[in-house]
Structures are given as C-alpha cells and as structure tokens.
Image 1 (cartoon, helix red, strand yellow):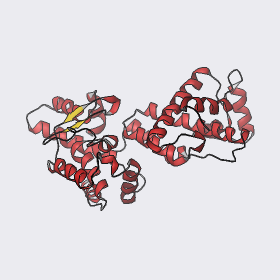
Image 2 (image 1 turned 30 degrees about the horizontal axis):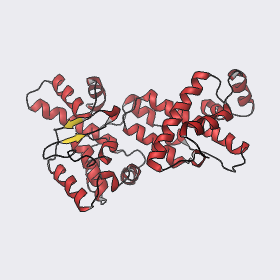
Image 3 (image 1 turned 90 degrees about the vertical axis):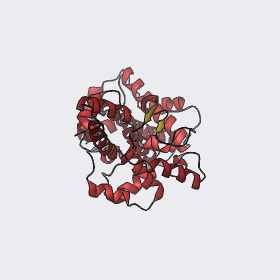
Image 4 (image 1 turned 180 degrees about the vertical axis):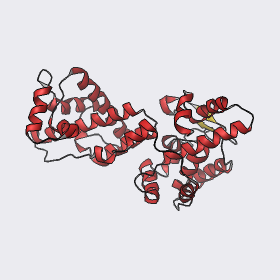
Length: 306
C-alpha cells in the first residue's frame, strides 16, 4: 500500500466506517454471534460517529508517523504486533496519562479490526492480531493508580549487574538522573547534551528542554562520554534500541520489569537530597519535578515520591 500515512489510515478505516447506522443494533448482532465483553464486541463492530472516527484516525496516524520514523514502516498493511506494542510502550515511557494511553490502545484495536476487513476485501491473505488487551492488561492500572513504585535495593542491584553495557548504562541514567527511556536514547545528539556536571535534555516530553543538575552518581557523566567515544556513535540510541532495553530488563525482572520505574527511585532520592540541603518538603518536591521534567508538583507528590 502506497501513499501518505494519513491517506493510508483513512482508506483502511473506510472498511469499518458505519456512520449513520445503528451502533446499538450492531452490538446486539455481535452478541448474538457470540461476542462477549466490550473487547469482543469492539472486534465485531465498526465506527458509528464522526467524532470517534476522527479521533481514532488521528491517533493511528500518530502511530503511523512514529512507525515510519522509528521502524521504517511505510506500508501500513505490513503492521504487526511488535510494531504496535513498541509504540504503546514508548507512550508509557513518555508518561502519558491513563486516559491518553487507553485512547491510543482503543484506536489501535479498532485499526486491527479495519486491517482485517481491508485484508479480506483486497485479498491480501493476512490476519492481524496485535494482542494489545492481553499485553497491556495491567498497564492502565500502573498509569492510573501508580502501582509501579520504586524498586527495592535487591532489584536495583540485579539491574546494575546486567552484562549488556548499553542497557546497564541506560539503567544508571534512569536511576541516577531520572531520564526517560526516550531521553536516554537521545544522549549525545547535541554537543552540549552532556557537560561536566549536568545533563541537558532537548525535546523531552512535550518538546520541553531541561537541565538535570541533581545526578546521584557523578561518574555517570564521564561513563556516558566514554561509551559514546569508544563505540564511535553520535547518540546513545545508535548502540541500543528502546525495545532491547525493555527485553533485557524483562529477562531479569519478568514481564512487569520497567526501566521507567527507576524514575521513582530517582525522585525519592532527589527529594531527600534537596531536603538535606535545607529546602522544605514542598520546595524539594517542586525542584524534583523540574529535574524530572514535570510541570505539576502533584505528579511528584502523588506518584513518584510514595
């Protein structure tokens, strides 16, 4: 399939565009045909409202743009489960809100339905099954309730003892500097992203820049510079992918393992450090929020510092 990402998504979604038809009747028919639960019914029904269609289309276009840039995926009929899962993992790593993540997942689940219809009508002979509900069954709980807290010392030690040098260094970046995975992969991209005492983040979440001065292990900066030089690479992401980082951590900690959880460890330690310097708790929380790249103190107070 050729064409712009938006054009491809629009064409594929035409397969399930049912605007003007009864959503209620379609759901009843799906139940009669054996569909159970909201997820099962969603797989058997289309899109019945203009606003829903536009929202889903725009959300899937974001996936398509991301996949084109990061995975070189130009033909969306070649979309597979690993690509969609990697995208949603990147959305989690970027600290997206619970509602945003659920919207992304719903749109991609509906995209799966549309792709299967498109495959049938165009004789592609393909079947699509992203398994998003199973893969991310607990992710919405983590985003909504902040169930993923700081790792204990034994768990942190396991991660720090991993043999893969790139992943080991990525772990240290999250633990000691509070970097998001996407920010770790960009390290070195700009000449002054790593200075003698600070790490400068360019284009963080929301496109915001920030300077991280509270770095628990100052040798981290030197080690990053050495790693980039020894491997003759421009940026950290040239040595390892986000998916590889996830894979190696989950080999050690199981399916729930996440480099993002180490930002909780960083936040707790950072708040303590600021308080030891004489700042009040409220001031320490605010300063920590700036280090982590958050605008609102309550995110730190309500999530990271517990």
